[in-house]
Image 1 (cartoon, rainbow, N blue to C red):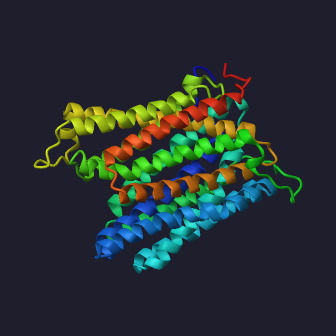
Image 2: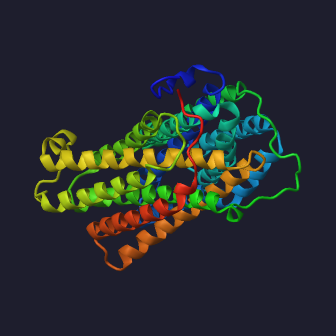
Image 3: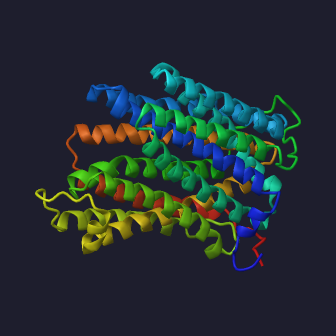
Length: 425
């Protein structure tokens, strides 16, 4: 492979079946979530406060399985046949999509919430297998490239699934159609999983245990990855408020920002391998974090220095981009997301290479638990800042400063992780 071009991996059986399996799984999760949220918001629930409460509840229900089952998922992935586990997980996903069809047909909110919990469980069990399988399927020279494509495709799937679910799920019949589409995607995922190359069983002793707390380098990597999810969660949560209160924009601007966030992460994830030329290291991660902070500060500065009149709400994307402030804010968000992709991919790759092959799935399972805890902490922080009267500008500034301080933590702790001795030629 030359010039960091990783797309040739999509032509190989070593990578494409796993790539396809995870893509359709991520698509299903986000399609269902989006359809469920818009359906209860605009059709099923007339009480605004009750609808908002259900939206928050649905987010918590989806994250809960990662806290409950990630450790078990990692243990099973290390000790049993991962190919068989993947197929059983994808069969379960088909059953969950059938539950979704029934739930949407009868407008049964408890059944739909149960389905959301099941989809979260599906993702919690698949995550450790997905990341632990890559080092077994790819050479070390290809690992950064493979992680970049996986990360990019995940956020593209999130974007497509959210758009499809939001547009189609606003009515009952549309939501049923969404579930039917997701059922087809689940079948495709199952078929793809059958073509994944045979994966070795990692742990020979089923009683073996592992904790990242015993390995400081793994713990620092997990904390750094979890910080990425905290930052992303807080930004995505605050973007609608920022759009409405600061920019006086409407739902089209929010949709633009959401799309830019996913596209930027995807671009950064793919660009990462090209810039690092296959070397697996943490050298540029602090700079990516600092870039995220600078973009946040500029979004805050431009938003408050520009005159977005409350008498003339902005909901046209073309009108927003035609202004200097609008185009600059758009560029800030895109660059923030690109930095985010460039930050996350080396960390996931380092976590894989630094983990013992016999316990890699369990380490990734612990990572998923920390990721979920950090997102819960982000939600709690947002609630507290709102309670104490922080404006959106103050929240962005605080987030940017905290993020920059975290860059110092990364700069101090992660350089001890060596460069990969196997660059891509």
